[in-house]
Image (cartoon, rainbow, N blue to C red; front, top):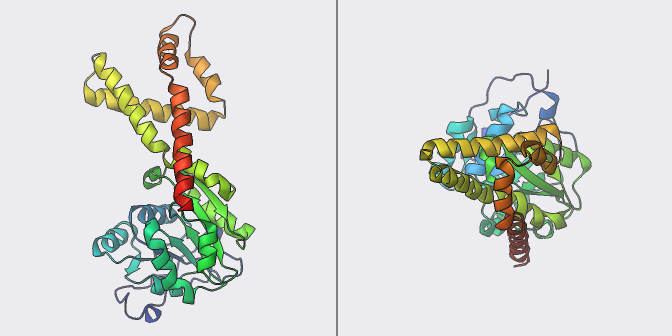
Length: 307
């Protein structure tokens, strides 16, 4: 039996008066985190929006933590209510209260709110804290400069399919983050999809590919659906078939481990219907256009990070 400790409402200065500890239950090993901080894992969200809620729900569903080990801060009543309704976890209004209660902090504010959030928590941030940021474009150097010396920080580029447990995230470790910190980040992010560690210099490329990529995929699904309608299918049927086709193709790539080109060839019969369609895509420059879109998005992300 793991010795479970809960958030102490007394330490939250009355901001979480409605928070009640739950009955301790056995936890999997992942619920305890040992890297200069006390076990068990206690996660605080700085921001309680959609992505924070999705992450929290994923952590709970994967049995990495219980709701009683989560706490979120947000100034908006609606965001706090939704977070609690969907996760069962407590919420407060102040980031500082979360910092005092948790040992892993997930910064889930908008990029233009990061400075204020860091200024609020800096005085309470200790060597026992790990900060995981999902704020787009904010570099590790900026976090490390705003927090006390030796701050352990991890920067993440998630994407919106994390909201349905099918995210694709890239993450990079700061100068003082440990290997155990990286393992924890990967375990947490894997609860809502795929998570891969990369160098920070590659996070702009991750942004251009998987960060912005869902929008490209949605446009492709819409185009497939339009084609189905043009060929005579009802819109609802065409859209469902298009979306399921993209989902199925993605699963084939991930689960078979085969190169997409090999899988493409398996569908393409000599003189058949598929090669006719592929010829039209080549004439339209599909592959070159998609490559250009990813590169353009990555370059934009780089410029935003320099701003």
